[in-house]
Image (cartoon, rainbow, N blue to C red; front, side):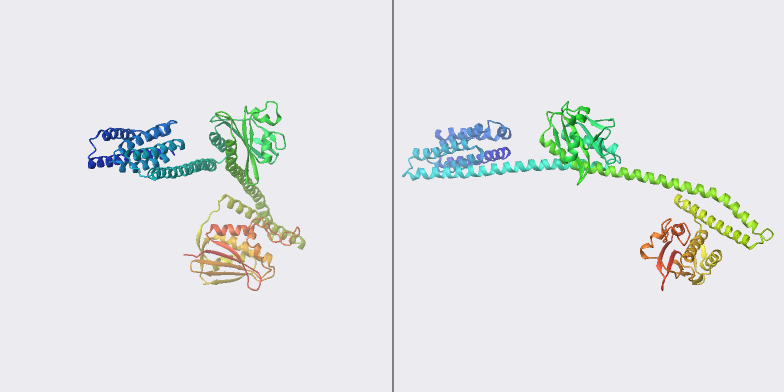
Length: 576
């Protein structure tokens, strides 16, 4: 409102020059400019307008004595215009000017000063009329005076409404400014989520940010430990812009401590004075606080912990600061919750990685340790199986053959484990070459001792792959078909497409349920999980198939065989 009134005074000063020019022109036209009754008040008006023009109204209006100065200025103008209006030739010019002063008075002055100005203007108009003897009836005086009263009342009402609206507007501006500051603080607290990756890094910065907003000298966070059902102090704590390592401290959630009370009740608490003898303030005393604000940290219904700020920089904490802490605790709780979860997941991932590495190292070590004696065993069995050394008794021959089969089975298992170990380490060598499908299918038939039907279209179709890896893939798929579809015909199909070759291993057994088709490629997964499985195996075969196909830039999937059964489809780049 002060700014508006100062602006109005500057504009009124500018308009005053125009009014003076009009009065001067009228005086010249009526040839009264050289009369003493004119030029003395005219000079006074000019000096008054000069002073109002050079005055620094912003400072004047802001002062407590502003109504007296502006009121005196207004009365001086009224007196000057009245003096000029006593001349018959200028009375018609003075009256409208006095009406204008009545209007300006209502916008510039408080009610008591405006009332005084209105009385002065009404008296001036009546005085001019009576002095000039132009009154034929009482109405000739009453009408102008009533006009002044109406103008003054109207402008006073306008001024009242304007002041009220400006008060409301100022209140809204303050509220918006407070909201802006709150949003900035909330944003700053929320933005700390991206500043660090551990609680030890983020807690001091987060607490320091909140303490600076609340003009507090000390800040500490206590996080809930679900394994012990306690609130633990997070180290370091924030003290006067620095971090201080804190001793390991924990409080019971169910205890009388004011911090536990805030956590349980999920509401902020204002501790106006820390009691030296109260059990509820024991942690606050240990922190060296004399007064504190305590607020729970929560994310929706999940309680994360408690934040404590203490020792205000100036005076005492206020209710507004307690409410601000409650507002800031929400994003702070979110930040700490997210960082805590991230830390937990990171730690879990690290441990899982360690376990995976230990498993890989163990498998690799055991496989190599088993491979050497197994090679000797297989060599010995091969030697004993030579005609000149082979036993002649049928039972002995059966036992020897069984030993050779089981040794070969164990050898394949060890090789599978070694392949899995190399896959985990990313150490699978790949040597891509053009391979004829018919040739590789025939080789697989010889190795697995299963007579699979072979279909290749066109007959000279080739695939770009690693020969050893592709052989192992096809052997595993054919053996898998023979194991789960015993007695059913098995087909090996190869089809050369526009950009790739499609290899299909088809059986006509019971098939694989659709909801199990992705799971069968996981390690150690078998469809028959009973303790008395009718089929052997470790569940590594199909996992190895998938991994080897992918390192050769291909893919593998399962489809249903027409008429029943399972078809494993391998897509690999076609030969060049």
